[in-house]
Amino acid sequence: TPRVFSGIKPSGGLTLGNYLGAIKRFVGMQGQMETIYCVVDMHAITVWQDPKELANMTREVAAGYLAAGLDPSQSILFNQSQVAAHAELGWIFNCVARVGWMNRMTQFKDKAGSNAEKVSLGLYAYPALMAADILLYHATHVPVGEDQKQHVELTRDIAAKFNHDFKNDFFPLTEPVIEGPAMRIMNLRDGTKKMSKSGESDMERINMTDDADKIAKKFKKAKTDPEPLPETVEGLKDRPEARNLVEIYAALNDMTPEAVIAEYPGAGWGTFKPALADLAVAKLAPISDEMARFMADPAEIDRILGEGAEKARAIANPILRDCYDIVGLLRS
Ligand code: TYM
Image 1 (cartoon, protein in one colour):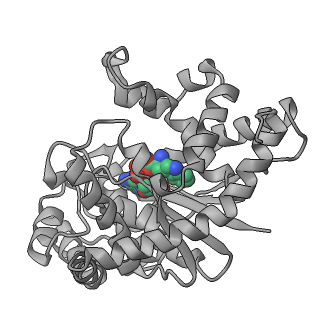
Image 2: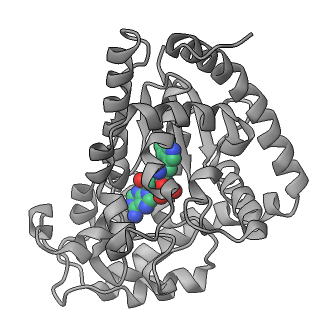
Protein backbone atom coordinates (compact mmCIF):
# COMPACT_ATOMS: atom_id res chain seq x y z
CA THR A 1 0.00 0.00 0.00
CA PRO A 2 1.28 3.47 -0.82
CA ARG A 3 2.36 5.43 2.20
CA VAL A 4 3.96 8.87 2.39
CA PHE A 5 6.59 9.86 4.95
CA SER A 6 8.49 13.12 5.16
CA GLY A 7 10.02 15.39 7.75
CA ILE A 8 11.45 18.81 8.52
CA LYS A 9 14.26 19.65 10.95
CA PRO A 10 13.40 22.17 13.69
CA SER A 11 16.81 23.83 13.46
CA GLY A 12 15.59 27.35 12.63
CA GLY A 13 12.49 29.13 11.38
CA LEU A 14 10.60 27.73 8.40
CA THR A 15 11.48 29.33 5.06
CA LEU A 16 9.65 29.77 1.79
CA GLY A 17 11.89 26.91 0.54
CA ASN A 18 10.48 24.58 3.19
CA TYR A 19 6.97 25.69 2.36
CA LEU A 20 7.14 25.32 -1.43
CA GLY A 21 9.57 22.39 -1.51
CA ALA A 22 7.87 20.43 1.26
CA ILE A 23 4.86 21.58 3.32
CA LYS A 24 2.64 22.74 0.46
CA ARG A 25 3.22 19.40 -1.26
CA PHE A 26 2.60 17.49 1.98
CA VAL A 27 -0.83 19.09 2.09
CA GLY A 28 -1.45 18.12 -1.54
CA MET A 29 -0.77 14.44 -0.78
CA GLN A 30 -3.01 14.38 2.28
CA GLY A 31 -6.23 12.49 1.57
CA GLN A 32 -4.67 10.82 -1.51
CA MET A 33 -2.68 8.25 0.48
CA GLU A 34 -1.78 7.48 4.05
CA THR A 35 0.43 10.40 5.12
CA ILE A 36 2.92 10.63 7.98
CA TYR A 37 4.76 13.90 8.65
CA CYS A 38 7.41 14.22 11.28
CA VAL A 39 9.31 17.03 13.00
CA VAL A 40 12.78 15.48 13.05
CA ASP A 41 14.17 16.87 16.29
CA MET A 42 16.82 14.17 16.59
CA HIS A 43 18.20 15.26 13.24
CA ALA A 44 18.27 18.86 14.47
CA ILE A 45 20.66 18.01 17.33
CA THR A 46 23.35 16.74 14.94
CA VAL A 47 24.35 20.40 15.29
CA TRP A 48 24.13 21.94 18.79
CA GLN A 49 20.72 23.46 19.50
CA ASP A 50 19.78 25.56 22.48
CA PRO A 51 17.53 23.16 24.46
CA LYS A 52 14.78 25.72 25.16
CA GLU A 53 14.82 26.92 21.57
CA LEU A 54 14.66 23.34 20.28
CA ALA A 55 11.36 22.62 22.01
CA ASN A 56 9.97 25.91 20.66
CA MET A 57 11.22 25.31 17.15
CA THR A 58 9.71 21.83 17.25
CA ARG A 59 6.35 23.41 18.07
CA GLU A 60 6.87 26.05 15.38
CA VAL A 61 7.41 23.46 12.64
CA ALA A 62 4.32 21.62 13.91
CA ALA A 63 2.40 24.92 13.86
CA GLY A 64 3.55 25.42 10.26
CA TYR A 65 2.21 21.99 9.33
CA LEU A 66 -1.14 22.68 10.97
CA ALA A 67 -1.44 26.24 9.67
CA ALA A 68 -0.73 25.16 6.09
CA GLY A 69 -3.57 22.64 6.25
CA LEU A 70 -2.25 19.36 7.61
CA ASP A 71 -5.03 17.86 9.64
CA PRO A 72 -4.24 15.48 12.52
CA SER A 73 -7.36 13.48 11.71
CA GLN A 74 -6.04 12.82 8.18
CA SER A 75 -2.26 12.76 8.66
CA ILE A 76 -0.07 11.44 11.46
CA LEU A 77 1.86 14.44 12.84
CA PHE A 78 4.51 13.87 15.51
CA ASN A 79 8.05 14.63 16.56
CA GLN A 80 10.69 12.00 16.00
CA SER A 81 12.13 11.73 19.53
CA GLN A 82 8.77 10.57 20.92
CA VAL A 83 9.00 7.38 18.85
CA ALA A 84 12.08 5.53 20.12
CA ALA A 85 11.98 3.07 17.22
CA HIS A 86 13.60 5.74 14.99
CA ALA A 87 16.79 5.67 17.07
CA GLU A 88 16.67 1.89 17.38
CA LEU A 89 16.34 1.21 13.66
CA GLY A 90 18.83 4.03 13.06
CA TRP A 91 21.42 2.01 14.97
CA ILE A 92 20.79 -1.10 12.89
CA PHE A 93 21.21 1.00 9.75
CA ASN A 94 24.48 2.41 11.09
CA CYS A 95 25.61 -1.20 10.93
CA VAL A 96 24.22 -1.76 7.42
CA ALA A 97 25.38 1.45 5.72
CA ARG A 98 29.02 1.68 4.61
CA VAL A 99 31.40 4.47 5.54
CA GLY A 100 32.16 4.92 1.84
CA TRP A 101 28.49 5.70 1.16
CA MET A 102 28.47 8.41 3.80
CA ASN A 103 31.64 9.88 2.36
CA ARG A 104 29.79 10.55 -0.89
CA MET A 105 27.02 12.63 0.73
CA THR A 106 27.32 16.13 -0.71
CA GLN A 107 25.26 17.73 2.06
CA PHE A 108 27.69 16.42 4.68
CA LYS A 109 30.64 17.74 2.70
CA ASP A 110 28.95 21.15 2.38
CA LYS A 111 28.05 21.33 6.06
CA ALA A 112 31.31 19.98 7.43
CA GLY A 113 33.48 21.92 4.98
CA SER A 114 37.11 21.90 6.03
CA ASN A 115 36.03 21.14 9.58
CA ALA A 116 35.12 17.46 9.11
CA GLU A 117 37.18 16.33 12.13
CA LYS A 118 35.23 18.56 14.49
CA VAL A 119 31.60 17.92 13.52
CA SER A 120 29.48 15.44 15.46
CA LEU A 121 29.45 11.76 14.60
CA GLY A 122 25.66 12.19 14.36
CA LEU A 123 26.00 14.65 11.48
CA TYR A 124 28.00 12.04 9.60
CA ALA A 125 25.50 9.25 10.32
CA TYR A 126 22.51 11.54 9.67
CA PRO A 127 21.43 9.82 6.41
CA ALA A 128 21.19 6.42 8.17
CA LEU A 129 18.74 7.90 10.70
CA MET A 130 16.82 9.45 7.81
CA ALA A 131 16.61 6.02 6.16
CA ALA A 132 15.26 4.66 9.44
CA ASP A 133 12.58 7.40 9.52
CA ILE A 134 11.37 6.36 6.10
CA LEU A 135 11.72 2.58 6.27
CA LEU A 136 10.27 2.23 9.78
CA TYR A 137 6.90 2.89 8.15
CA HIS A 138 7.69 0.98 4.95
CA ALA A 139 7.01 4.32 3.26
CA THR A 140 6.87 4.17 -0.52
CA HIS A 141 6.76 7.91 -1.33
CA VAL A 142 8.96 10.63 0.14
CA PRO A 143 8.19 14.19 -0.96
CA VAL A 144 11.35 16.30 -0.56
CA GLY A 145 13.16 19.17 -2.22
CA GLU A 146 16.05 18.57 -4.58
CA ASP A 147 18.66 18.86 -1.80
CA GLN A 148 17.37 15.66 -0.15
CA LYS A 149 17.41 13.54 -3.29
CA GLN A 150 20.76 11.93 -2.56
CA HIS A 151 19.64 10.98 0.95
CA VAL A 152 16.52 9.25 -0.36
CA GLU A 153 18.62 7.40 -2.90
CA LEU A 154 20.90 6.27 -0.06
CA THR A 155 17.77 5.04 1.71
CA ARG A 156 17.19 2.72 -1.25
CA ASP A 157 20.77 1.47 -1.00
CA ILE A 158 20.35 0.76 2.71
CA ALA A 159 17.04 -1.04 2.11
CA ALA A 160 18.56 -3.11 -0.69
CA LYS A 161 21.58 -4.10 1.42
CA PHE A 162 19.42 -4.99 4.41
CA ASN A 163 17.18 -7.11 2.18
CA HIS A 164 20.20 -8.79 0.63
CA ASP A 165 22.00 -9.41 3.93
CA PHE A 166 18.96 -10.48 5.96
CA LYS A 167 15.64 -10.96 4.19
CA ASN A 168 14.52 -10.49 0.61
CA ASP A 169 11.89 -7.82 0.01
CA PHE A 170 11.59 -6.85 3.68
CA PHE A 171 12.04 -3.12 3.08
CA PRO A 172 10.48 -1.44 0.03
CA LEU A 173 12.67 0.57 -2.32
CA THR A 174 11.44 4.10 -1.73
CA GLU A 175 10.89 6.71 -4.41
CA PRO A 176 11.82 10.33 -3.81
CA VAL A 177 8.95 12.52 -5.03
CA ILE A 178 10.60 15.62 -6.48
CA GLU A 179 8.28 17.41 -8.89
CA GLY A 180 7.00 20.88 -9.61
CA PRO A 181 8.71 24.20 -10.17
CA ALA A 182 9.96 24.81 -6.63
CA MET A 183 12.26 21.89 -5.88
CA ARG A 184 15.22 24.14 -5.27
CA ILE A 185 14.34 27.66 -4.17
CA MET A 186 17.47 29.80 -4.25
CA ASN A 187 18.88 32.40 -1.91
CA LEU A 188 17.49 35.86 -2.80
CA ARG A 189 20.96 37.46 -2.65
CA ASP A 190 22.83 34.73 -4.53
CA GLY A 191 21.06 32.67 -7.18
CA THR A 192 23.71 29.93 -7.02
CA LYS A 193 22.99 29.06 -3.37
CA LYS A 194 19.95 27.35 -1.90
CA MET A 195 17.60 29.35 0.35
CA SER A 196 18.17 27.90 3.82
CA LYS A 197 17.15 28.38 7.44
CA SER A 198 20.73 29.00 8.46
CA GLY A 199 22.09 31.45 5.86
CA GLU A 200 23.89 34.38 7.49
CA SER A 201 21.69 37.27 6.29
CA ASP A 202 17.94 37.38 6.86
CA MET A 203 17.59 39.21 3.52
CA GLU A 204 18.53 35.94 1.75
CA ARG A 205 15.34 34.19 2.67
CA ILE A 206 11.62 34.65 3.16
CA ASN A 207 10.59 33.27 6.55
CA MET A 208 7.11 31.88 7.03
CA THR A 209 6.64 34.37 9.85
CA ASP A 210 7.74 37.50 7.88
CA ASP A 211 5.10 40.25 7.71
CA ALA A 212 3.92 41.95 4.51
CA ASP A 213 6.45 44.81 4.73
CA LYS A 214 9.37 42.44 5.18
CA ILE A 215 8.29 40.23 2.30
CA ALA A 216 7.89 43.24 -0.02
CA LYS A 217 11.28 44.63 1.04
CA LYS A 218 13.08 41.31 0.56
CA PHE A 219 11.71 40.78 -2.95
CA LYS A 220 12.40 44.42 -3.85
CA LYS A 221 16.04 44.01 -2.78
CA ALA A 222 16.37 40.52 -4.29
CA LYS A 223 19.37 40.30 -6.58
CA THR A 224 18.59 40.09 -10.31
CA ASP A 225 20.41 40.76 -13.55
CA PRO A 226 19.50 44.03 -15.31
CA GLU A 227 17.52 42.40 -18.15
CA PRO A 228 13.71 42.32 -18.02
CA LEU A 229 11.84 38.99 -18.02
CA PRO A 230 12.21 37.11 -21.32
CA GLU A 231 9.41 36.47 -23.80
CA THR A 232 9.65 32.66 -23.34
CA VAL A 233 10.94 30.38 -20.56
CA GLU A 234 13.93 29.36 -22.67
CA GLY A 235 15.17 32.89 -22.01
CA LEU A 236 15.57 32.05 -18.30
CA LYS A 237 18.46 29.73 -19.05
CA ASP A 238 21.69 30.93 -17.37
CA ARG A 239 19.71 33.55 -15.42
CA PRO A 240 19.49 31.83 -12.01
CA GLU A 241 18.06 34.82 -10.10
CA ALA A 242 15.40 35.58 -12.69
CA ARG A 243 14.47 31.92 -12.96
CA ASN A 244 14.20 31.63 -9.19
CA LEU A 245 11.73 34.51 -8.91
CA VAL A 246 9.63 33.12 -11.76
CA GLU A 247 9.63 29.68 -10.16
CA ILE A 248 8.60 31.11 -6.79
CA TYR A 249 5.71 32.91 -8.48
CA ALA A 250 4.72 29.74 -10.33
CA ALA A 251 4.80 27.52 -7.25
CA LEU A 252 2.91 29.99 -5.05
CA ASN A 253 0.17 30.34 -7.64
CA ASP A 254 0.03 26.69 -8.81
CA MET A 255 1.15 27.65 -12.31
CA THR A 256 3.94 26.53 -14.60
CA PRO A 257 6.87 28.88 -15.23
CA GLU A 258 5.66 28.98 -18.87
CA ALA A 259 2.31 30.40 -17.73
CA VAL A 260 4.03 33.02 -15.56
CA ILE A 261 6.15 34.20 -18.49
CA ALA A 262 3.04 34.23 -20.70
CA GLU A 263 1.43 36.55 -18.16
CA TYR A 264 4.47 38.86 -17.83
CA PRO A 265 6.33 38.64 -21.15
CA GLY A 266 9.21 41.11 -21.19
CA ALA A 267 8.13 42.70 -17.90
CA GLY A 268 10.63 44.84 -16.00
CA TRP A 269 11.56 44.08 -12.38
CA GLY A 270 9.68 47.21 -11.31
CA THR A 271 6.51 45.43 -12.42
CA PHE A 272 7.29 41.81 -11.61
CA LYS A 273 8.80 42.16 -8.13
CA PRO A 274 5.82 44.01 -6.61
CA ALA A 275 3.43 41.51 -8.23
CA LEU A 276 5.46 38.66 -6.73
CA ALA A 277 5.50 40.34 -3.32
CA ASP A 278 1.71 40.84 -3.41
CA LEU A 279 1.18 37.22 -4.37
CA ALA A 280 3.52 35.97 -1.63
CA VAL A 281 1.79 38.10 1.00
CA ALA A 282 -1.64 36.91 -0.16
CA LYS A 283 -0.55 33.27 0.09
CA LEU A 284 1.65 33.41 3.20
CA ALA A 285 -0.13 35.90 5.49
CA PRO A 286 -3.09 33.60 6.24
CA ILE A 287 -0.65 30.80 7.09
CA SER A 288 1.55 32.93 9.33
CA ASP A 289 -1.56 34.25 11.12
CA GLU A 290 -2.68 30.67 11.72
CA MET A 291 0.82 29.71 12.90
CA ALA A 292 0.70 32.51 15.48
CA ARG A 293 -2.69 31.30 16.64
CA PHE A 294 -1.37 27.74 17.12
CA MET A 295 1.79 29.00 18.83
CA ALA A 296 -0.36 30.83 21.37
CA ASP A 297 -1.50 27.44 22.66
CA PRO A 298 1.62 25.26 23.00
CA ALA A 299 -0.21 22.72 25.15
CA GLU A 300 -2.54 22.00 22.25
CA ILE A 301 0.40 21.47 19.87
CA ASP A 302 2.02 19.14 22.40
CA ARG A 303 -1.22 17.20 22.68
CA ILE A 304 -1.47 16.82 18.88
CA LEU A 305 2.17 15.65 18.64
CA GLY A 306 1.65 13.21 21.51
CA GLU A 307 -1.40 11.69 19.87
CA GLY A 308 0.41 11.48 16.55
CA ALA A 309 3.36 9.76 18.24
CA GLU A 310 1.03 7.12 19.61
CA LYS A 311 -0.34 6.41 16.14
CA ALA A 312 3.18 6.38 14.72
CA ARG A 313 4.35 3.86 17.33
CA ALA A 314 1.45 1.58 16.43
CA ILE A 315 2.87 1.29 12.89
CA ALA A 316 6.58 1.49 13.70
CA ASN A 317 6.91 -0.87 16.66
CA PRO A 318 5.73 -4.06 14.90
CA ILE A 319 8.07 -3.32 11.97
CA LEU A 320 10.98 -2.75 14.37
CA ARG A 321 10.12 -5.98 16.19
CA ASP A 322 10.21 -7.95 12.91
CA CYS A 323 13.47 -6.28 12.08
CA TYR A 324 15.02 -7.30 15.44
CA ASP A 325 13.90 -10.89 14.86
CA ILE A 326 15.32 -10.88 11.33
CA VAL A 327 18.67 -9.58 12.57
CA GLY A 328 18.71 -12.05 15.48
CA LEU A 329 18.48 -9.59 18.35
CA LEU A 330 17.07 -11.65 21.22
CA ARG A 331 13.90 -10.63 23.02
CA SER A 332 12.65 -12.67 25.94
P1 TYM B 1 15.23 20.19 6.00
O1 TYM B 1 14.69 20.39 7.36
O2 TYM B 1 16.54 20.81 5.66
O3 TYM B 1 14.18 20.69 4.93
C1 TYM B 1 12.85 20.23 4.98
C2 TYM B 1 12.28 20.08 3.57
O4 TYM B 1 12.31 21.33 2.88
C3 TYM B 1 12.98 21.17 1.64
N1 TYM B 1 13.74 22.40 1.35
C4 TYM B 1 13.69 23.04 0.18
N2 TYM B 1 12.99 22.80 -0.95
C5 TYM B 1 13.16 23.66 -1.98
N3 TYM B 1 13.98 24.74 -1.92
C6 TYM B 1 14.70 25.02 -0.81
N4 TYM B 1 15.49 26.08 -0.76
C7 TYM B 1 14.55 24.16 0.31
N5 TYM B 1 15.10 24.14 1.56
C8 TYM B 1 14.58 23.06 2.17
C9 TYM B 1 13.93 20.00 1.85
O5 TYM B 1 14.30 19.42 0.63
C10 TYM B 1 13.08 19.09 2.70
O6 TYM B 1 12.20 18.33 1.91
N6 TYM B 1 17.04 15.53 6.10
C11 TYM B 1 15.84 16.32 5.96
C12 TYM B 1 14.78 16.02 7.00
C13 TYM B 1 14.43 14.58 7.11
C14 TYM B 1 13.60 13.85 6.22
C15 TYM B 1 13.50 12.56 6.78
C16 TYM B 1 12.95 14.18 5.05
C17 TYM B 1 14.80 13.74 8.10
N7 TYM B 1 14.23 12.52 7.92
C18 TYM B 1 12.77 11.55 6.15
C19 TYM B 1 12.22 13.17 4.41
C20 TYM B 1 12.12 11.88 4.99
C21 TYM B 1 16.20 17.80 6.12
O7 TYM B 1 17.18 18.15 6.69
O8 TYM B 1 15.27 18.65 5.62
